[in-house]
Image 1 (cartoon, rainbow, N blue to C red):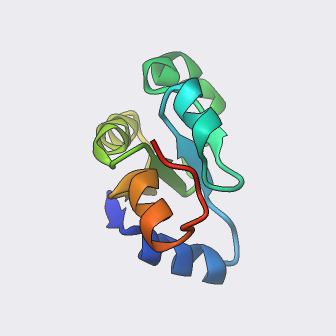
Image 2: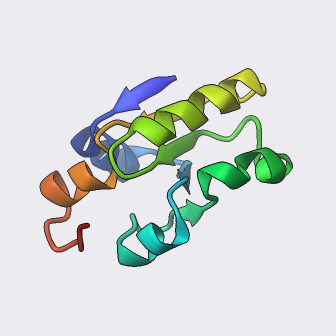
Length: 106
């Protein structure tokens, strides 16, 4: 699993040909407060039951508040056979500080 800071992810998203899946694993109330544009919400607790809906081969960026839950989900996905996982270390909190200072925080 690769680890990207918010600034690294922003640069990567701006330059990549095919956009990765931005998988947010926070709770719905957190997602309602703030989210990275084009991200999809599947709360961490629902990943096991929703995993069949995800593409094993698609590059996937896992996102949470500070990067801890997302790292755990990234490891889980790798154990399930996913081969192209990126963890957003620092999470949306770091994104709000360094990439989009207009983003709401909590």
